[in-house]
Length: 254
Image (cartoon, rainbow, N blue to C red):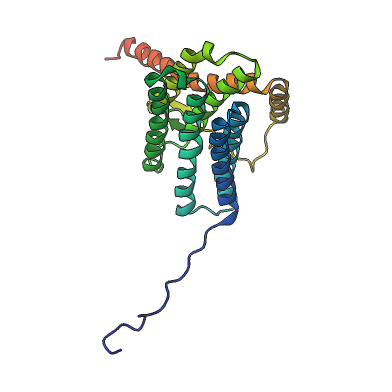
């Protein structure tokens, strides 16, 4: 028809997505959903393992995307939504179903604090991704917080600890993880590690030692690792405060 642009009626070009990194993201999302389903069925050990699997897959998708140069805006958004399910909703529901449910309002409030903490942590990360030092995370990363909660569930189930005996401990740990995610504490990200560069031989030995320790008692070792990581932010903050205070007490030159 006259008066219409020549492009009228043509279909917009289709934009595809990169398959490889999004496969890992989908796997992480599936593992998080699997954890929720297993918690609803009372299989809490399987639920905890599902969260750890989601954490491993989530760590791989970003590195695979960077190594294969397949980063995309779609992948970033998809990864963020997957993280909210796997490391926000899933751990909160697993812990609530495991032991917080018997605490009434206090129980679901603690689960909600964790869930909203993960949501705020992810939103802040997405908005500050281009302006922060990539070597450090601001606040406890949501996968680490989820691993802390899942590790607690796994270690108590594996050792046959009655759920009712650890309700308050679980409540405090859930609140601690949720609040720590939204603090300004610094946590080492490990993003400055270049896998393409050669490393000293001792690093290979340490990696082998790490897997050996995990194989001895996975629930205990994993829980202790992520508990130490969660506390490391507070330790670094205290050390930094002490150094600043000590520097302020030094006499200034005229």
